[in-house]
Picture 1 (cartoon, rainbow, N blue to C red):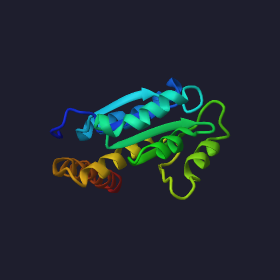
Picture 2 (cartoon, rainbow, N blue to C red):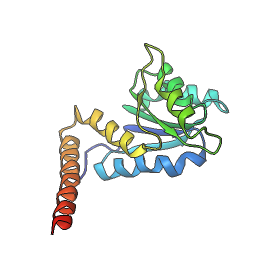
Picture 3 (tube, rainbow, N blue to C red):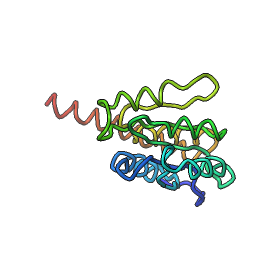
Picture 4 (cartoon, rainbow, N blue to C red):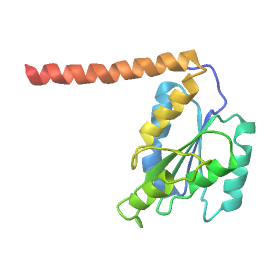
Amino acid sequence: MTTKTTIPEVGIIMGSKSDLPVMQDAVEILKVLGVNTEVSIVSAHRTPDRMYDYARSAASRGLKVIIAGAGGAAHLPGMVASITHLPVIGVPVKSSNSIDGWDSVLSILQMPNGIPVATVALNAAKNAGILAAQILAVSNEQLAQNLLAYKAELAKKVVDSAKELES
């Protein structure tokens, strides 16, 4: 599965390096689907200037979607969404200082009107990657075909498992 561009179209950012094991799932699925990404650490609380610079320059650097993962208070996705016009997908991360991840989920989910952030389930960076690819596929026929092939493979696995169980 490939697409034609070499410029990163999806930015994958996280509040700290400890979020990488979760966010790696987004990197991997986008690679499978043929979408180029860039990955960085951008903390809303510890490096606010870096966050502002990242969000302000994202579109001019060719990004079309941003996936932002954060744990705890999880302000990164919402703050980035408040700065850029690009779609932002938030990944709540269950971190070591988390309240079972609910703090992260609610921080990302409960955005005020006018600043939407698409929110996936706790630690569901793979779904964030798929959603980013679906957004891009609206104007990229090859990527749409890659997604259809991926979903067909998911269906095949279910049918194969059902046949194995039933035999």
